[in-house]
Image (cartoon, rainbow, N blue to C red):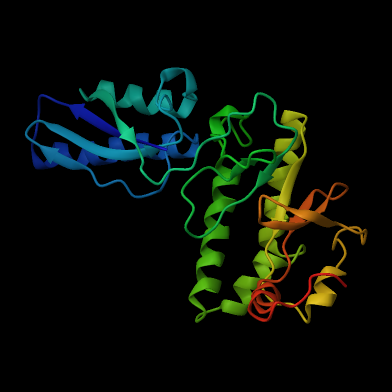
Length: 269
């Protein structure tokens, strides 16, 4: 990820104009977000003299180049220019905690994956597990990626609830774990759309926390087709199961894995 300074110069600065400027800049930031060019959903806008600025996180150093714009971004920039707002961007540097993006020339497949603390794109290369900017893929919904970003937001909300272990923990965990949940259905639909446009498989991750025993976990079969799907060794030190028929990934229940580690429980059935 890269930190970018986004600035707007204007010859007029009063309260009425500032309110209009906030809307114009907000519309552009939202368009960038839905096109995968910036991350997050909160961007404080700072007024200083006759200029306005904000900082954003981008997938790549060149993410704000015009060549990646979609029609909504171009329209938002045009509206800013019509109101006398002159856009300028500056790359401040690489985020110190950023993940290395995928550098594979031709990934064999992709994974739709996120967590409650993840800022990066939910599309990962299955070979290196590096994130891939959404705008590198064909748009999935009316020249943008609203369906994928909506799924990511919903997933992160559920993941936050289950991590907090208080309000709606069980319901949120079911959404993350059950192939028939609304969250999983929307994620699988995103995978289908992306796979059709790219010609490459997209795998969907089913999170799993609770398990009856380590033995039953190791013998668990794919919830989609019932076939064996255990991986040896683990994939990216995260996935213990992979079904190439249903394009699903999962893990040994975390409570069983932690118990196994604490008691040195054998991993073979």
